[in-house]
Image (cartoon, rainbow, N blue to C red; front, side, top):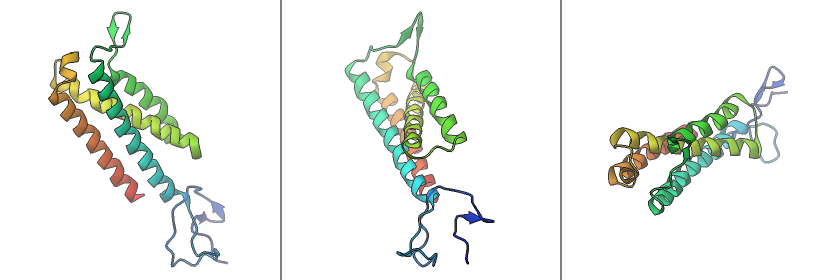
Length: 163
């Protein structure tokens, strides 16, 4: 009997689905078998891109409505760059190291996208401006943040298509 495409030496080596070409004869009644990597990769990509865009839009709208909404911890002003790093680390490490599937994986991917969006938005803002609240609502900050998040989304889309 011919081994299934996701089997390696009699062991199931990867339980992430990818669509097998319809011409592949794997004995499935409909002629199509799902291996997990491709389907998960595409869904992960959409989740990542959606969470980055939504986070960027929500943060920008919120901080344009409330430009002086600062997060202060004692005498320190905590920019959303630092919050993003914490979220990125908290979600990225278990997503990369763990073997979670389903809703937990989707939550980790979304959290990674949220953290990445916060980091990329604030990173360029802190480089090209004086770091003030007034500078954050300026055009250079908006264009820079949108460019960085946009490039990350394009890269994520490209990677998602390759999986």
